[in-house]
Length: 629
Image (cartoon, rainbow, N blue to C red; front, side, top):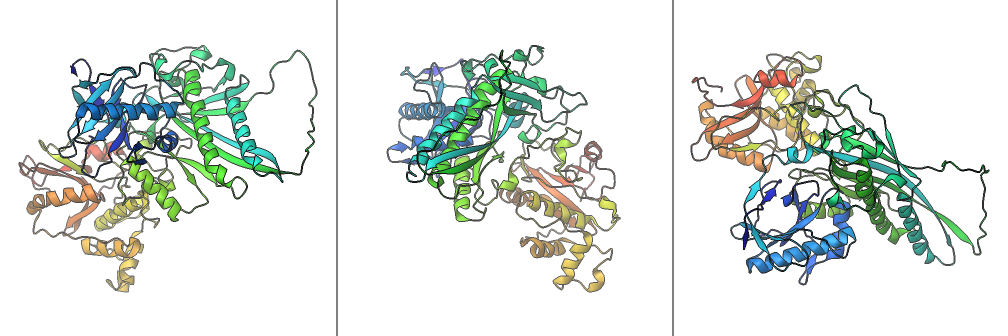
């Protein structure tokens, strides 16, 4: 039976099912989004012939999935009876959600059961309205959002809580087996303390876009609401302002207005910092002096100190009250992370403790961050860490040939300033980054766009006080390409100067020593030599007789951007440009090229660069018959 008044909304890259796809995927949504909105999918990677290994799945998902997101359904790839398959998907999703939430019954929660055909990739979505219902309704229509990041971050923000804990444990030397139970009781005592009426939560803004100073707010444990379910929390209109502390929203600490050039992403989200403090100075009718208690140990004991460095990241919309954000997101997040770290510590409790640290990533294709706990005792190239990252790539559907989840790729959540160019600048660098984002369209009708994957810095004439106007365009294009390899963490080699580029060519015997310090041009062949020497990167050089033949290479260029993703140096004679993408209509042959022009000599102003056409779509022949190439 089809239910016509409901629809599935998918705010993630279109679900594509391949023959070797995971048999089961978890569908991720949020209580802050409209019902039946899918924001991402996670693969089930622990299963056997009898079905998913739910304890293992829930243990890993609890760490990975930020509070503010949850499992709203499951997708099964198969050709058996669709309704029966949907029933299995719904049952699996509910089982996992119960383990994640620690409940035994899900009250009136709709769950999606999706069934994908492995041959065609077609997906049918069924809906189960309650846990007790036995019927499944086919839901149509299904709509796909075209800007998931804007959907998530236009009204969303991040809550960050960093909490170091030193946990002292005393256990009898002759009964080391008791250490585990003592450790568990100590963890339970910490968890209970999070809900103590005397615990204080200090809330403050981590970043501001104006000179207005927003004073921190203090909420006590006694003022929090631990009873209301997240799904039942009433969100206030973001325009509503309350001076009463208990009715303050997250919006109180967020930017009141955002630039039209604002990039919607986790990196550019408003961050609200929450600190946990234990208040021992409550008013008392009696004065008393500090007291020391002595507990005699009946047996020889040993002191053990376990260090925890909790760092919890949560997602919330700006309309949620601060007291709900703390009680329903931050505190459960702290508890889950502490329990996860406890389990990772247990096997090594009496030996060398693992050095555990949470990191947050927002990998490509996923509009929201994920949290990963890494053991820092292992180097990133050691097999245990490599296997852990490989498992994460499998779960998140990420390619295995790119270092997307190394520590250097984690989100920088340090306090930052919202300047006008904040979203286009790399921390610690004065160079513009990713200037092509947000530029006008190419004008190709019905084309398919293939773009550079990841970030790069814009190098152009006269930067760093170095006058290379008239001869250094290929050097600048090479610098942009090297910056891409650095920012994607393929290489830690510094972006070379003109002189270092020339030195490399002399070192390999391609140029005479007199070339160093000269103002001689270089071309594609020299670029390939330098990339091979400095980065160990091999290049392919494509030759065309004239610019008019370049559109014939559009399909090959599109394949490069889809599989490799690096910028391309493109040039002829004395001119060189950096190619960032193509827009190509296979049916008509119409195409356009996204060019980044290194000949620019002005200030690093994004508006000036884009409006002046220094970064933009170019056709080989424009509407006036003028040839760009």
